[in-house]
Length: 118
Image (spheres, rainbow, N blue to C red):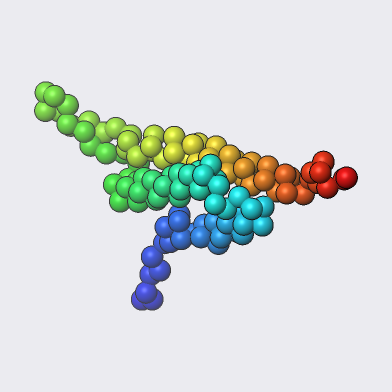
């Protein structure tokens, strides 16, 4: 049987996309901007959280057994599902903010200043 390839983490899967965003930020002269850097860091953290939640769901399944205070075992939804959904939503918002920052700087760089017209 062939060797099974280990799935890449989200940060590995999106490394090229992140590199493209970094190049766009550099071209727009915002790659050192605090808002850009802190938003990028937050996005990478969110990708890592998505990885962890996905790994937990893959390992434990979509349901887990929970013991009630009286000792009964019940099957409940894996808590990682909620974490995954909330983090995915937040990551979508974060990447929108990230792209908006880059686009704003790109627009500002392309717009001639009023002093240049004199």
